[in-house]
Amino acid sequence: MIIKSFEANKIKTSKNNIILMYGRNEGLKRQLTEELSSNFNDIEIYEEKEILDNSNKFIENILNKSLFSNKQMFIIRRATDKIHKILEEINLKGISDTIIVHSDNLEKKSKLRSYFEKDKQLICIPFYPDNDQTLSKIAIEFFKKRNIFISQLNINQIVTKSLGDRGILYNELLKIENFSKSGKKLTDEIIKKLINLSENHSISELIDNCLEKNKIKLIKILNENIYSNDDCIIILRTLLTKSKKLLILSKEYEKNKNIDLTISTSKPPIFWKEKETTKRQIKSWKPQKLKLLIYKINELELIIKKNFNNSLNLLTDFLLAQSGSKTNN
Image 1 (cartoon, rainbow, N blue to C red):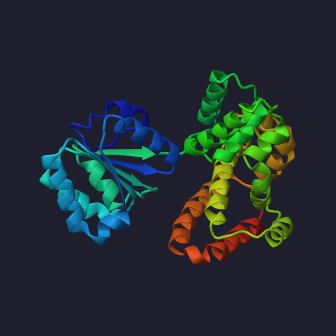
Image 2 (spheres, rainbow, N blue to C red; image 1 turned 90 degrees about the vertical axis):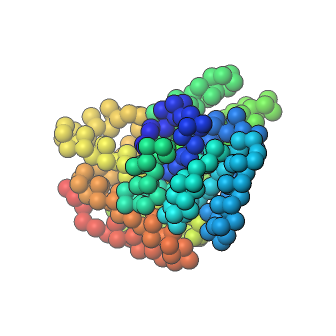
Image 3 (cartoon, one colour; image 1 turned 45 degrees about the vertical axis):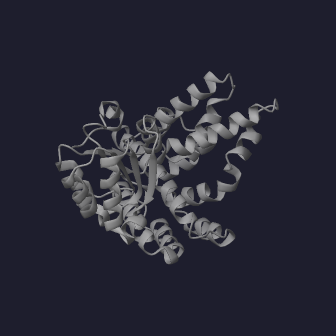
């Protein structure tokens, strides 16, 4: 049974006690898991690999504890379709304990996702990235409660750094809160250092030049920076976030045919330093091409996760291919 993340307060763990949470909003998943686990004193956390290595022992452990002890919660992290049959067996045998299963993004054809969606006794909750407006509201409320003065521009920078994940957002907000307790003044420069924007500047610049189709500058940035395999997912997520924003602007521009109007009416507002860059990007992409790009980014992320040691080469080839494609005017 599918429910929305904002409907999670309807969950009764006594009735629907096996729950699948999937998607790329780790912060929201963690927040809901903490809320559901607050009523449990006994919580055990497993990685999927631990369970797959000895599935019989895990099933026996779950069933025995469900019979002879107070209610427990079991959390399974990084679950994939490989664990589908094990969870199905546990569900068929019946337990009184609660199992929460955390997964990354699951495709529609996923056996695990399909099983949870179709069974009315199971709960399936997709967690999509938060939009900028939601994250901005969270940040504003956070600072307001703590009487911390911070400009909207700085909030926009923090939101951009969060990549649609409120978990990352809270980490950045806590950094700023902890610094404010020192009594020192929160300047723009201090905030940039606290959220590591200066360190990630090359990633933002890399993506901007890719979307501008500025291949010469893109190659220069790639040559001047030493990216690791671990950076690849961050770069891809940044590209995905910016591509989705650009798609909204591109659709609006296609309607009104006025680039300045498109920029000026953008929500959230575009910072003045980014306006010219954004104009060039809008003129370089049509909505249909951006939809295809977003699809390819998601596809590449799956490929990179399966070929992690070669991820940097895969990503570099992809960025160069996008920056070298013809302008879509």
